[in-house]
Each structure stands twice: as C-alpha cells, then as structure tokens.
Amino acid sequence: MDRNTKAINLMKEKKFEEAAQLFTEVIEENPEDPLGYINFGNLLMHINDLERAQRFFNKAIELDQHAATAYYGLGNLYFEQSVYPKAQDNFQKAIEFGLEEADVYYMLGMTFQNEEHDKLALPYLLRATELNTEDDEILFQYGLALAQSNHIKDAKDIFVKVLQLNESNSDAHYNLGVIALYEDQPEVALQHFNEALAIQPEHVLAENGKKQIEQLLDSN
Image (tube, rainbow, N blue to C red):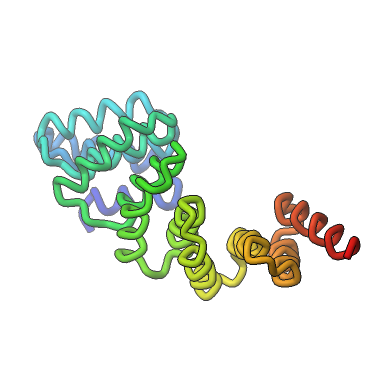
C-alpha cells in the first residue's frame, strides 16, 4: 500500500495527524506532483481549515491546470462557505477536465438548488442519479427539484423510488403526502405524514401537515 492510500485510510479512521504526516512526506518527496497537495487539501477540509485547504488546492492547479479533483475540492470549499457561483465554476471545471462521478454532478446541482434555481439543478441531479443509482439522497434531491419545478407526476415517481431504496426516508414520505394533498387525496396524505412521523417523530412539517388534514377531515 503506497503512502497516499495509507494516509487516505487514516483520514477515514479520523487519524488526521498521522495522515497529515504521511501527506507531508509524499509532498516533500514529490513536490511537483499535484496529488499530494490535493489529498492534503481534502484533509484540511475535513478539519475545517478552509483557508489552508484553498492554498493546497490552488498549488495543485498551479502544477496541473487540468487537475480535476483540485477543482472539485475548491468547489466543495466554496460550497461550505455558501459562495455558490464560485462553487459552480469549480465543479464545472472538474467535469470539463474529466471528473465523471456522481458526486460532482450532485454538488453542482445542489449549488443551483440552494440558490432556488431548481430548473437549472435538474440536468445535473439527473446525471448524478444515472451515475449512482443506489444513493437515495441523490435521488431524493432530484425528486425535490422536480417538485419545485412543478413536475409533480415525475417527482411522485421519484419519491416512490426513493422509498424502494430506503423505506426509512421520512422526507420522501412527507413530500408524497404534500403531492397527495395537491391531488386532493387527504387520506393518502395523512398516511404518508403518519409514516414520516413514525420514522422521525420530530418531523415538524409532517406534524403540521397531519394536524391540518385532521382538522379538515373533522370539519367534513
């Protein structure tokens, strides 16, 4: 196992000081290789040292202007700071330079989602679901973007698929409840809100939805 791989495994075990020591050795031995700087930047992101992380990602790009994962790192860094236009620029560069992974499309979609540009988010979130068909959170966010773009039927189909992947996704039940209300099916909505609350008893939106339906049904 090479030192980069060993250090990445140490990061996963939250042994950050030991990982930092190995990454430092990698950089000292190969100061012209951008990979060491990218990995160290990722480590600094994990411990929330964003200023230093940015310097390491920028150093990697100085060494290789096509270092896709360095741009991805910068995208994540700006996303953490809610600087979404800069995050978008860097995620798009990562894709342009060959990073064809679900995470980069997902994060790019989420930058638009957080700016309430749901229609702009759709193609990126769709691509993320194509690249990773087993991640219920990616699929859920795609469904949410569809719903917020008024593609209600398509959103409903997606939330059903989310529950097929993860029957404990309370937010999928909540959104199916909202769609059922939109379709004038209060009993179905109540069932979904109850399911959401069974999974997550503190789900405030589902609790409010349940109360509104119960008041509606009681008044009839």
